[in-house]
Image 1 (cartoon, rainbow, N blue to C red):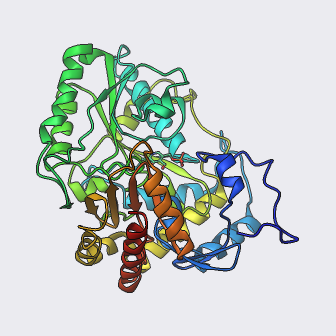
Image 2 (image 1 turned 180 degrees about the vertical axis):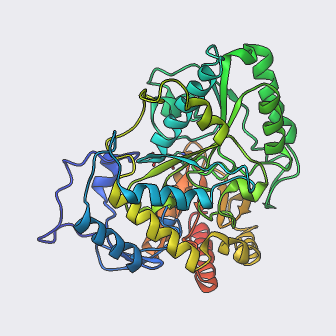
Length: 443
Ligand SMILES: Cc1ncc(COP(=O)(O)O)c(C=O)c1O
């Protein structure tokens, strides 16, 4: 991409996140505009968004309804303090979220705590869980359980329960332990939806109890479908079993729905999709269609109410952010919910499921493809690595697809797809054919 244009940005000052900075700056890839299903790159090409940005622009890009709501809010109330002061739109948004909250009617997780990102939602949920245990007289429960290959953002809590060694190895961690991951290509491969084998891996939570003592464990957190670590779909019965064991031992169950929330699986939340209700749900990304940073933790009334004790003039939870419930973010969120509802986007993935599954699984047999997994509007396509160069093949496919006008995401040698939920069938075909050609060239 030519950066010798007069208005091209200088690249040194911006220290990019989760990026090989020197490699990127030697061959930068810049996006300058977005509309609907497409980005425009700095050199003027249209790029089909196969990843909804970073799993967040569920309603696609440049949605006028959201843009208008944000600019109206900016002109009306741009900011208001979040501690000890309120503003109506934060309450309005919470009420709307409560109405679609995960959980069955009458037992929805309809108490909403605002954050600014997925990482903050995770650390908030872990803190709520520990505070809850203490509030009910279980103050020894301070350990948190995550899962190998889990990604829960980059806060100290999130990396402690996360299961990616590169995110953990240089940093101190809070007391945590990990269930084994459920990825098992020997027993489950090329599966549409949930794999048959592996429910018994949920018994690892029982092993944690046997090893550490239930009285030390506050919560267990999992992504219902692991996204960032390569699209790992829970085996049939796994989440149900985790719920059962957590309940039996007084351990709170947290679903990290930063990716799966807001329609990604064809239901508003993965909790609805799998029919398993956790105690806390973390969200971000699709909450505002990605356009203004925001996250939210959904808590059950039991968890919330346990903390609403003590003198009425006492702060119940010593936690919060300057931008919790930021009015502009709430305006974006409310308009996003309007778009989701008017276009039935929270269930559209279910309508596209058969088409998506068939199209993506048609790549079975393509060069070096060792597995394909699909659920909702998500696909993971796992490649065999090049000898001595893990990740290189998928990276080449990523660069090749971009040159051909398709944005995909890679993690190691796994390609992840998660287009905006407005994707058309012809665009699904385009994703598959562009990707198929790139796989051939990377062989
Ligand atoms: C499941 C999950 N949790 C947490 C996060 C962290 O979110 P953020 O990058 O907004 O902090 C992510 C980001 O991809 C995620 O996928």
